[in-house]
Amino acid sequence: MKNRLNRRKFFGVSAGIAALSCCRSEKPGEGTERQARINSFEFDEATIPEFQEGLESGRLTVRYITEKYLERIAEIESGDRGLNSVIELNPEALEIAELLDKELKSKGPRGPMHGIPVLVKDNIGTSDRVTTTAGSLALAGSIPPEDSYVAAKLRQAGAVILGKANLSEWANFRSSKSTSGWSARGGQTHNPYARDRDPSGSSSGSAVAVAANLCSVAIGTETDGSIIGPSCVNCVVGLKPTVGLVGRSGIIPISHTQDTAGPMARTVTDAAILLSCLTGIDPKDAVTKQSAGKSFSDYTRFLDPDGLQGARIGVARKYFGFSEEVDRIMDDLIGEMKSWGAVIIDPVEIPRKGKIEEFKIMLYEFKDGINKYLSGLGTAAPVRSLAEIIEFNERNREKEMPYFGQDIMIKAEEKGPLSSADYKDALKNNLRFSRKEGLDAVMEEHQLDAVIAPSGGPPSLTDLVNGDHFVGGSCGAAAVAGYPNINVPAGFIFGLPFGISFFGSAYSEPKLLKIAYAFEQATKIRRPPEFLETADLGLI
View 1: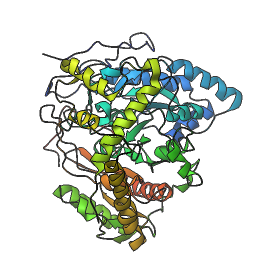
View 2: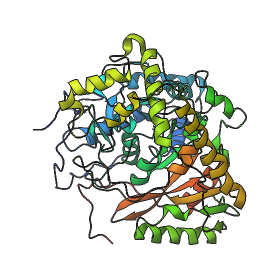
View 3: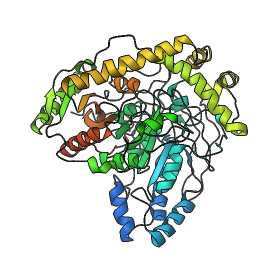
């Protein structure tokens, strides 16, 4: 029997716009025919600089741009064949757009993000008329008492927050058997390149919405792979910043050691513009104090089409080998990078001198962090602790756990406080082995500007019965260290995308953006999705 929750209507942009089904889930394998042809979209693949030119010339208005994206979301997401990438829309979006138009006329733009339509992942708090739930029914109706740091910075920059993007529920920290992109509120997010393919997670909706042109740019979050993975399989640029470069207050947490928000965009330029408006010191996130003097208000200054010339790039071969075709394409790209002036050191080995206990640390920090987050919500929290979330899920098993359980949450609840020696020792060793004796060591040994590896392979089939099928990827090294990583589209296999990762030392975003931009400009690999129901396996 189909598990369908109540459908949420969003306000009409104009007569005849269909309702967006924000709360739905679907039968595994439902639908085999191709999706109906998607209408052409005026702003297909439009970039932030193009929007700014249109606004400054008077050819466009913020309201017009916002209306068109809301219409686009209605077209793509309405009905049973939607992508389920948008979980809830902002009913104040047009009002905000009109105010920004007035300001544009009277004062000029606040900056390059003025009037740009953005979707944010549904674990990023907004204190407006949009809920923040991490995709869980346990937080249905929850509106934080104040904006998250990220939401406040977006508003300050003049962005239009269109609404919330679907995600892997609780940022994929509920079950070891989960299916990426599924949440009880939003249902299963679908990959726009082939709807039966895994969108990856946990920032599934953010990546899919960007890929399908349902927003200009989006915000995702990552603990380990949650920006890089979805960007890889949805053919978008994803930037996981150094932990501490972007404030985390007001974001539903997993691990304060590894969590960060970051840009997801169709171009490196747009990702750099979005990152520029997010940096700074967050008074409620002590880690951001470390970024003082290391962050920039304009990362586009580092974008250089000749950025590969003289760049020293190490090839982390340990992350190859899961796909012959990925390896072949990567080797071709490495050869091209050499021809563009890069100095390639192949291979390089990231040392692993001791035991990394990443999952153990996450369990401790999730319990501590989620309990603190819920207590900070006050009366806005339908549940007040991790224990109550677990109890809620059990009481609502049919809706919350139809496909997979909550073994990770149960393990986290069993952990003690952060003052325990077990936690402290594991954290100390993790930081030492992943940083000084890990990535930092290989960067210093070879005087590297970046390390490269495939971000992952093309997407597997979505499997709600058995859960995700992880084949391979390279996000772990930068994630555990808390260091930056950028995914850029690298190629297609049977029409399914995969990406290349550029990662490096703490606060090396300028170098990585420079290299990633040069790679992007030289290759121009990204292409928009065709919204197929299934991949064309006859495609060569």
